[in-house]
Amino acid sequence: MPHIIVEYSSNLEPEVEIQPMIAAMHKALSNEGVDAARIKSRAIALDHYVVGDKGVDGAMVHITLLLLEGRDEATKKQYSTPIHQVALDAVAGKDGYCAVTLEVRDMDAATYIL
Image (tube, rainbow, N blue to C red):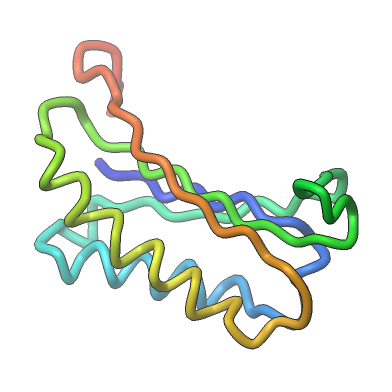
């Protein structure tokens, strides 16, 4: 039940195409052996943000990868690295500064309801 949640500063659009980016992240995770039918990917535009010392002139993409608990660090790295690379590639041609970050969080299997 992995979830890919992308939060991004709204100043990335239209320069960065968000839907193709999250579709590529979805595919990148499935390429690592995760059943694509179980992945849920979404993006949320942020209209109010401040990015480091660039303020509102900076841009950002923050990815949260949620995985059911029990995966070791190597697996988390295996799953997250290609997703992060997709975001880096997507913003590579953007003018100006763009911070791209990713975190992996464990979901508690006992409280995750299908």
